[in-house]
Length: 237
Image: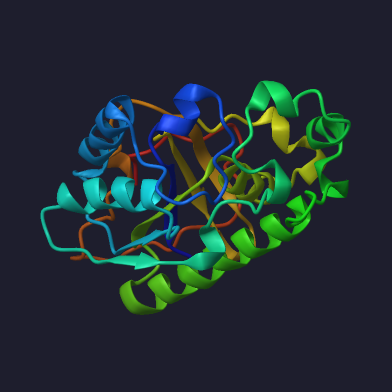
């Protein structure tokens, strides 16, 4: 299958003030977040992207706009509701230090698969819709652009963590062990229905190894099998 680059939106005013923004309208990137998005866009500028799909919330659309703006060829941003932030219900808009005193907080940390936010959605439902959206768009990108295509999905911290957990074969109850910082880059390949995760939560470094191979000559199909001994790394035949 194609390669999906998972990008979390840059830092927002809510992140900086310690508030759980959720789906609150009008939450935008702050000055730091704008710089983070620009740096991520610069990292991805060397990779010709087949598609950019984004959560409809403004902070993700701002991050996606920076990414497509740095591309050499025009790329449209497609909005995908299934990649939107978790519906935190009554927790939305409240300070994190206040939420940490709630009885439910311990379950969010230790057994998130059992959690349904009051007046909102369950974390299991969030994971299911996020994973389904990634698989659906990945199949569409491969059908249109081939198995070497690279595309970007811009989403939110908990959504991306849940997608990474599924790709790693990790139970949702362990997904809090993963870190997905603002404007970070993680990469997932759904090769042959057996996902691999080349990197998670990266903030800097060359992403040129994601560039699809040149068209001339015989192209070798990626295998779903892990390379015994670890292999030679990216950028090799």
